[in-house]
Image (tube, rainbow, N blue to C red; front, side, top):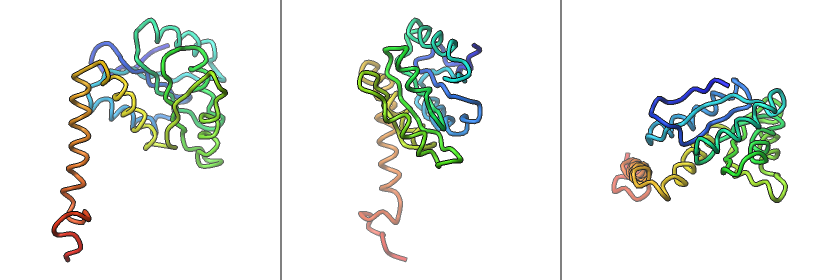
Amino acid sequence: MRAVTDGRGTPRVGVVMGSRSDFETMAGALDVLRDLGIAYEVRVLSAHRTPHLLATYSARAERLNLSCLIAGAGGAAHLPGMLAAFTRLPVLGVPVQSRALSGQDSLLSIVQMPAGVPVATFAIGTAGARNAALFAAALLATTDPTVRERLDAFRRDQTQAVLNDPYFDGHPQAGVE
C-alpha cells in the first residue's frame, strides 16, 4: 500500500479512488486541497479487486487521525460504501463519469446507501471532486483556524471574481457593448 502524499506533512484527508483511470476526475479534489494548504494522501484501492487492503486502509486511516476520506468510484461505485462500512470517519463519495451511463450508475450506487452506512454524495465528475474537497475543508475549518481563514479567503475570492466580471448582472457596465 504505497501512498502518494502532497509533501506538506501529516495527511489530514485521504483521497481514494477505485482505479488509476479515476485520477483525472479526482485531480480536482487534489487541486483544491493543495490550494487550501491541506495535507492529503492518495491511494488506489479497489472494493472488488483489493477488498482486504481496503479494510486495512480504513483502520489505518483512523490510526493516522485522518479527518475524512474522499472516495471516487465509477460504474458499480462500491468503494465509498465499503470504506464507510469499515470506518467511522466521514466518507465523501464522488461519482466518476462512466462510459456506459455517463456516471449516473456511479451516482445512484453511491447515493443509495442503506440506513446506517452514510456516505455524503457529490456531483458526478470533477465538480463533485472539487466540492468534496471544499466540504472536507469545511469539516476541518470547524476546529482549525488556519483552514477556516483559507476557506474564507477562497470564498471571498470566488465572490469577487463574479463581481469583477463586466457581464455580471449587478455590474454597472453589464449589458453595455
